[in-house]
Amino acid sequence: MAKFNILVLGASYGSLLASKILFGGHSVKLVCLPEEANLINSEGFRVRLPVRGRAEQVEIDSRKLPGKVSAAGANEVDPRDYDLIGLAMQEPQYGSPGVRGLLDAVAKSRVPCMSIMNMPPLAYMRRIPGLNPELLKPAYTAPEVWDHFEPGRITLCSPDPQAIRPPGEKLNVLQVTLPTNFKAARFDIERGNEIVRQLEKEIDAIRFEAAEGKLELPVKLRFYDSVFVPLAKWPMLLAGNYRCITEDGMRTAKEAVHSDPDASRSIYDFVMEVCTRIGASRDDLVPFEKYAAAANDLSRPASAARALTNGAVNIERADKLVQLVAAQNGMRHPMLDLIVARVDRRLEANRRARQTAA
Image (spheres, rainbow, N blue to C red):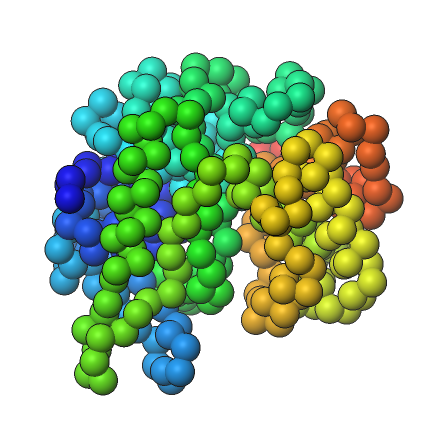
């Protein structure tokens, strides 16, 4: 099997995917802030995973894996040195000065890119037939950063697994709270597809040495031919994540979904209909019942809600993206409009507060 050199922008969520890739003996470079980079370079990282039937979580220590991990700042890497590039930062981060320059270099390198953001890159949306990407730009913090990407060289990997930085732990520790699979769509270039298919097989074959024997670990990488499969995350985001956001605070994803199951089903089914209208098959998507069952384990507010509560002036706007896609197809839902308006108000309040403080 070929050994790859892989660059991942974002060390928090990115370390989950990196932990799986390292089992195959590949080299992974994580792009992150100096404090994180120094810690990873000196101590590696840890990923804790729940395993069915086991009381204690498994802890993966990157230092004990066949592959090698290192970390660096955005201005310390050359994308042309890599076989595959993962995009694992929050969408607003790509507009920041240092990262913006790196992303432009990534685009011009023509190296296959796999995004694991909740927010599909605008370049990926250009792969969806029948959509006008120009009309989707208001959903993006800095839409121009995606201009130099060739759409066929960028794919989307639905970030279904949920993970957190455990309170009180170091920055190089990640804890998986919902061990579902990454679901990647194909590239339009075969080189990218070959790499992802190999990673999928290697991750399937992982067996972790534990005291009780070899364990099969959750969180697989799944490769799909359909470009619509990663959009299965959209109904979940609108029924759960963005409904964690309240007018003046936040609630858990479990509360958002189960406090009013009829409302949750209504918005979920609407977003599924948006996906099928633009070309997705029902087989590409996840039924509401399956998501609702998984939501019982989502005992924390979503990252967008936490960011707003902490004063963020920009967050990923998948809510607005879905609204704009729906509008292109003559569709709207009052709850979706309510969610978008609420997030707009919260962001505007945070921006005013920051200006006042300045």
